[in-house]
Image (cartoon, rainbow, N blue to C red):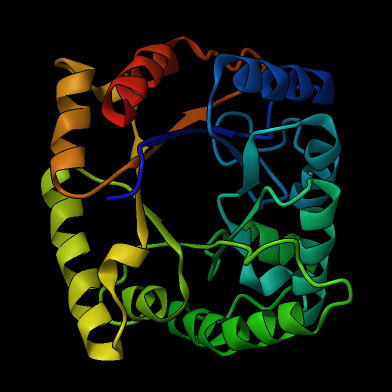
Length: 262
């Protein structure tokens, strides 16, 4: 089983960039393993026209700001950039960080982004077809770069669609991220395992990542952690909203991680 890792997703909304920079630094000081942002152009909740910042520009800054922590987008929208360009952006940020980038990617869903920035929204199936077609192109371009990436850049795929997304995950992903109760996530993980068998992939190669909706936890949060862990999930992500970006709920999970990994 993969070692337990704790991640934070710093929602790049409702904050000044100085707040985001401080939170990244604080997360690294606390010993968080991964810091994510997201790839949108407007806030996803709260004031829809509130403060917001772009994803990949920020990742370049994080590459220079941080030393040990891994980082990436949870997740990049496949629709917003030419796949060849995205691969070269990832290769560059990989080098800027000394090999700490995670390439998170998904098919996209937030229609306002598409409408206001002039992208064709299409349909959920058409966006998934685009992702399916682009992932091989991304991997090919990464292999052609000079200099080559410092390591095999991990590809994280977000989503739980059982007919297409989990098949794409089985074919291409090093990490898989989704959200739900332990029962729901266990069912999705079982379907991912089935797809791995169909495409000839060892399911143990794929790190399983769960979103922790800590505001809705009613019982012992570490009992919930154990439930996910028993199902094979070893990566846990906490979403943080600006401008305060409260890291307090993460601390007991870091202690639990250290005990699990001892």
